[in-house]
Amino acid sequence: MKLKTGYQQFKHVLTNLKKMLAQAWQMDKKVTTGYFLTAMLGALTPLILSLTLKYLIDYLISSQNLNITTSIPIIIIVILAVRYALFLGESVIQYGLNRIYFDYLFRYKLQNFLNAKFYRKLSTLDIPHLEDPNTQNLISKVRDTVSWRPPDRAACTDRVRVRSAPAYARNDG
Image 1 (cartoon, rainbow, N blue to C red):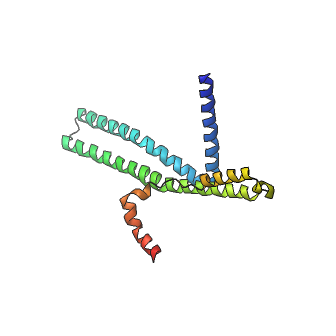
Image 2: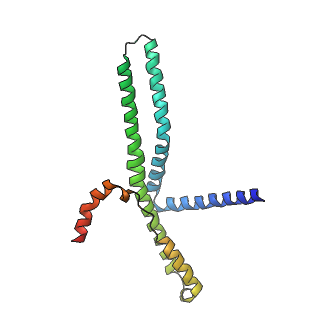
Image 3: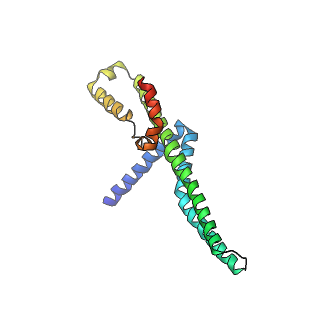
């Protein structure tokens, strides 16, 4: 019995995920693609980093066996330079593009899309539905839930606060 309910819950989660991704795709194809591509690249970058360093080290060790003159400090410098270059690429993709730009853009565009969809449906309701107290309770619950903005992780960093301080000063005047 538990296995069947677990399967049904899993199926329900997959159905909701499919609907959510369909709405995100309907909202903006470019932002959705960019968000998931940068997330995928950010997740694969540590693996690519490990494999690249493995093959680089293997190549440098095998080149010593081929009597190519390279010294140990040069090998270490090359390995560290490649590692830090790849790490910089990972940071730009994962934090610069995905977590700051696409995450912010995706979340707020999706939130605005859901708000517009809710209010479009609300505007098509008839007067008798709007006068019904049960419908009013449902509308207020949905309005509170739909209008909720996800917390902005980027605004919690000192760097963003310092950068946005002049913007707040202009709004106060």
